[in-house]
Amino acid sequence: MTVGSQVKQTLAGLKGVGATLKIYATQSEEEEIKTVFTDATGITESVIKDLEERIKVLEFQEPQYKGH
Amino acid sequence: MPEWINILLRSVAFFIIVLILVRLMGKRQPAGLTPFNYVTYGVIAFITSLVILNVVNNIAFGLVALVVWTMLPIALDLAAMKSKWLHDWINGKPTTLIKQGKVMEENLAQVRLTGEELLRELRAKDVFRLADVEFAIMEPTGAVNVMLKADKKPLTPHDIGKQVSPQTEPQTVILDGNVMDESLANMGLNKNWLETQLAGIGVSLDNVFIGQIDTTGDLYVDLYDDAIQMPQPKVKELLYANLEKCQADLLTYALETKDTGAKDMYDKNAEKLEQLIKKLKPYLLR
Image 1 (cartoon, each protein chain N blue to C red):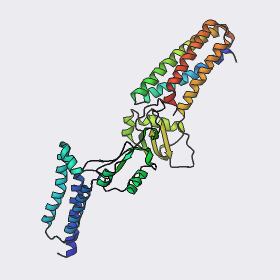
Image 2 (image 1 turned 90 degrees about the vertical axis):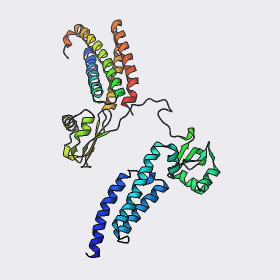
Image 3 (image 1 turned 120 degrees about the vertical axis):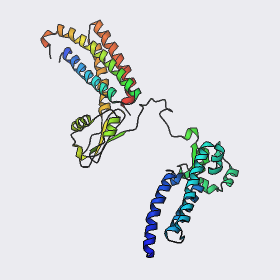
C-alpha cells in the first residue's frame, strides 16, 4: 500500500467521523451538547482540508497510483 | 320503593359525588399526608358509608357534612399557601432528630419516637450506622429524611472532578408498536427518521414493544421477540475509537514522511485531534 492510499484511508475515516458528529450536532436537543459537537465538526473539517491538500501533493509525486 | 333500590341509587350517586369532591381536594398521595389529612379522608369515608347504607336517612344532611369536610380542607390549604404561620399551625413543623451527628433526645421525646424506632427509620433509608448520619429530620408527614456525613455520601462525578455530558429526559417514541408522534416532534424528529433508524437495525415497527431516544437521538428498542439479540447503540463508542485511530494514523505519517512541511502539518493536526478526543470523551463514553 502506498503512502497516498494510506492517507486516503485515514481521510475517509475522518470524513465518516465528521459526518457522525454533524448528525449528533443536529439531533441533540441540549444546547451544550450541540455546541460541543458543532465545534468538533469544525475541527475535523479543518483537519480534513489539510489532509486533502497533502493528498494532492502525494498524487503529484506518485502519479501512477492516482485514484487508488 | 324497595329498600335495595334506594341503597343502589344512593351508592351510585355518592360514588360519583365523592369521586368529584376528592378529585377537587388535590392529588397528594397517601405517603405525603399529615395525620389530619388522614382524619379528613376518614370522616369523608364514614359519612359516605352512613348515607349509602341508609343509616342517615336524610340525603341532604349527608351532603352538607360531606361538602363541609371537603371544602374546609381546600379552603385551609389555600389559606396556608398565603400564610406561613397558618401553614405551620395546620401541618406542623419538621422536627430535627439528629444534628451534627448527635441525637436530640428531647426532640425524639417530643415526637414520641424511641431509639429503636429511630434506628428502624434510618435503616429504611439504607443507613445502618448511626455514626454515618450528619443530620436527620422528621417531616410533618412522619417521614424521616437523612443527610449523611460528607465522606459517607455516594460519590458523584463532581466529587472526582469528572466532566459528564448533560442529559435530558429520554423520549418514548414507540409503545406497543405504535409511533408516539408527540414525543418524536418534541425531539424535532419525524416518522421518516424513525423508519430509517428501524430499517438500519433491521427491525419492523410492529415487533417493537418500547422504543426510546436519548438526549443525542440514539434509539434503544425492546422487542416482543426476546429471542432476537438487539445490539446496544454503540455509535458513540465507535466514533471515539475512529477518532483515536485517525489521530494515531496522523502521528505515524508524521514519523514516516521526510518532507518537513508535511511533518509539521501532520503533527499539528494530530495535536488538534488529541485535544478534540479529550474534549469529546465525556460526551462519547459513559
